[in-house]
Image 1 (cartoon, rainbow, N blue to C red):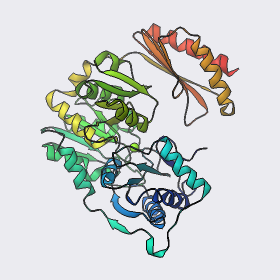
Image 2 (tube, rainbow, N blue to C red):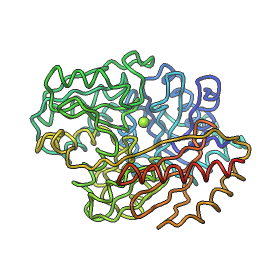
Image 3 (cartoon, protein in one colour):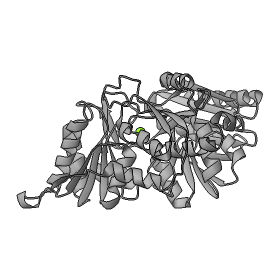
Image 4 (cartoon, protein in one colour):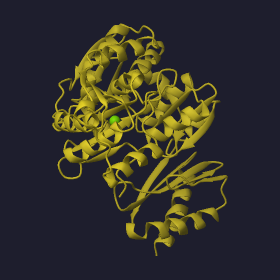
Length: 434
Ligand code: MG
């Protein structure tokens, strides 16, 4: 198993994700960087992992600038003046997880090549440690949150709305409510006490975890509600009627305003986006770092993935849930979100999954590709599984990253066509599993 996934290193505390591993990653990064910003989310293991990771950095001669309890986009901003950033976070994973995510000064997460470089040093254990008089120093960054707020405020306007903010018991408590207040909003907070046990709700901002937010928006007659994941690089929302605004709908709202020429989305994004924007759409594999990379490479005006990751390159290549909340509030100040959502088409979407033997993954994927190529389609994308584009719909077939299953998704302009596409995919996948 590679150490780095698409969002850094993650695992269960003191089982896969140990202080020894955090220290080793620190030593590897410390041999590439002279100065690094370090921060942590609100997990119970945060201080332990931050200390271990920082020790590794300093052992390799890197000066550490500790930002303390901050959101991931705040840490990425703090890394702007450094050689690198290291965020101790397991994002939306359950409380028993911890992780390390590494950042470049321009807000891009470490890419595949950089991650491989770190991984190679960690696995070979060939660390370049320094003698006593050359180890790194440790400093406290006291203004990381203020600097992040200032940057966001330069790119958003005034809005006088009532907003409910669900901070997910994470580090968003000290930034999102303040940004929205400075914009002129009245803010009501939920789960604004950082607590690594996540007593308010699980840290993944999916509809079933946001009942309190929906109810509070309705009972306080708020204009909207916003919710983050555990480290606030993600943001999803609830409209003025208390209805959940899913990733595809937010993607459409943001893209309509910000994607003038080019737009980057992940392969699982709805085809509604192609209907709504005139910008050229580039599709990339699922994972925020792939969206950031493509936004930078294609000089896109905006990038997003339906899980709630929004990239506004006029400010940063780091997905920034706080900036996204502020920009959604701006949109909602012009017109009610419940009115705006009516203009976004929702097409029938079907999802299905079949179990498979992961030890046969390579062989099955090879057969699948051959079979899917034989189907008459407009385009076959082969990243992150397979995406088939038809004139009136599309399908995604991909092995799950977390379970031994092949997942299928079909979307089309009408129910019958969605069913047809799904049954065609199911037949093909089942044939390849024999
Ligand atoms: Mg996250």
